Every structure is written in C-alpha cells, then in structure tokens.
Length: 344
Image (tube, rainbow, N blue to C red; front, side, top):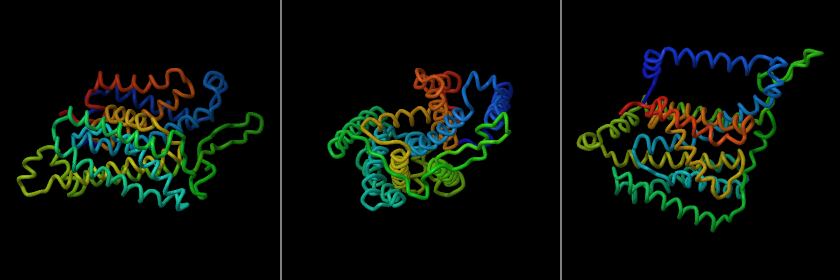
C-alpha cells in the first residue's frame, strides 16, 4: 500500500517529471477556472462542452472506482483472479432495478443488493476460489467459465433489452456549480455551469467510500490482518488467526461493492448484456494503471481512465477507446507496478 512516503519518493526520483506534472496541473486549472479567450474557443469549441466532458469523465471515474476498488481488493490484495467480477456488477444492476421497481425506493436497493451480491461472492470464494489458492491459471479459467454461466442466466431471465433505474426525486434536475461556463462579451454576465445532481452526489459517495476503505486498510486492526495475510499467510495462520475468514469477508465486501456499482451504472446510463465485459476490462485497466492493491491507486487510475475516455468521445471519438489502452501501455512500459503500486 502506498501513501505520502511513496509520493515523496517519486518526486525525489523524478524531479523533472514531477515539475512537468505540476505545470500541466496549473494549465489544467486555468482551463477549468478562467474564461476562455476567443482563440481557444475557435480551436476547442465552447468551454461548456469541455467542462461537461470533464465532469462526465470524473463522475464516470467514480463509477469505475467503485467497480475497480472491489477488484483491487480481490485481485490486488488477495491475489485471486476473479474474471467474473464484471458479472457481479451486472447482477447488482439487474437486482437493483428489480428492488427499486418493486419498492419504489432507489436507496433501498443499495443495502439489499450489497447483501445479495456479497453472498454470491462469499459462495464463490468458499466453494471455488479457496480450493485453488495460488493457482492463477485455474482461477482464470474457472472465473471465465463462471462469467459465461452468469451471462447466460442473466440473458435468460432479463432478456436482451436495456434497463435503467430512475433516480429519486430529490436527486433529479441540475445543480449549479461554481464553475464559469460562459461570459457574455457585451454585458459581462457570468453563466455558471449546471450539472446533474445525481452524478455529483454519486461522486461524493464514491469519495467517502474510498476514504473509508483506505482508513480501514491502513488504520485499523482488520486492515493490518489483511495486509499481514497478503505478505505472509502461513505465518499469520500459525499465530492463530483464521485468515480464511478474513479473506472471505474481503471477497464478500468486494463483490457487494461491485453490485452497488451496478445500481449506479443503471442510474448513470443503462444496463444491457455486454456491460459486464466492458466494466471488467475497465477494472483491469484501472488496476493496472493505478497499481495493484492500492486504493489510492485505484482512485487515480479510475480518474485518469474516466476523463481520458470522455474527453476522447468529445474531441477524438474515433480514437477514444484506443486512448485508454495507450495510457495502460505507457504505464506498463515505464512503471510496470502502476502509478502508485509497490514494487514486489
């Protein structure tokens, strides 16, 4: 796990890269906060388009983080290759749709889906993955088989149509943000950016969940047990700790988090067959870019991939998907352990 020490080490080892990142950050803040001159508008289009793409990327990154955070716990910390993680996301979205439709409550869907999908994760870990610890190839093949079975079952039950969940009334409509969208040249009147409230609050929730996960892993006895079990499982088991129960709980939590992300995905856009593969690939890219086993790395990777994807859709739609994989390739070439991943 990384923290401030690793960041300081990066700055000390790569001062020129750190300076470049700082200059890029300053230029980026100027693009976001300052009014755009006519020359910039002529080349990039209206500032409102840029801000909408930026916020769309940040909120998409929040969704990617919720999916990838569970994945980085299971894959990055426990070293369990669960390629059915995307299926848990899609199952959570479908179950969330059923609960929200039956009860009329969007919020009720979250605890119900978390428990249900966490239970599926517990069963997968207890009956399948715990029998093949350290056998990555078997885990990969079995989890691919599970994802195919889950996909066929979901297609049989929910069909091939798209489903979306309507946000509650108090989260509907736009929210005015303190970002200048436009300045009228003749009157000087400032227009502030308006953005969907539900996306802003989901971003806030993702930040709160990320901070809570980091605190649990780095500041609690449970987090110490998890990290100790990753580093030396046999020694921890010999000391009397039931490490299998700890890992079972971690797997269940990661699965439940993916299920809740499915509800958010259905609220953001819609769910349909194939979304499980899309979000599995997104989780893999996020974990590779950010660093395996790092919650902060997962957040950074999700932010980079989400913003790059949305900016690509707006300014280079032909190459938007390629851009995310170019970022992953660059990280693998120059920092194989990920931006905030620890060397092993």
